[in-house]
Amino acid sequence: MLSMISVIDDDASVRAATDNLLSSQGYLVRTFASAEEFLQSPQLQACACVIADVQMPGMSGVELLTHVRAQGHSTPFIFITAFPEDSVRDRAWRAGAFGFLAKPFAAPNLIKLVEAAISRGNAG
Image (tube, rainbow, N blue to C red; front, side):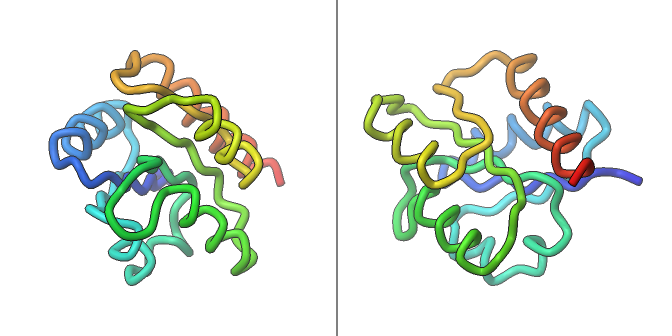
């Protein structure tokens, strides 16, 4: 069974590049331009991992994670950001992030994080 990854980023080029990278590794990928678009979809129930930008118009990635956790979901979240300040990273970790990468990130680093997140999710 293919693991489905949800990619949430307001930058279309980042969504496309991340989609291409993960699809080339055999993952099923769904992309969203905003946290709100993701929440209105049925994907939260089905996805094995979420990759989200930290800073987006409307609901931020960290706010999305907090919202998802409050609903009782334990889906692993990997954050990507062009603004990797310590305060942002700390907020993401406190909210329950699985991983955190600064843009531009190396493709193998993202793949490793996704694999670890999915295996952790499948383990429990």
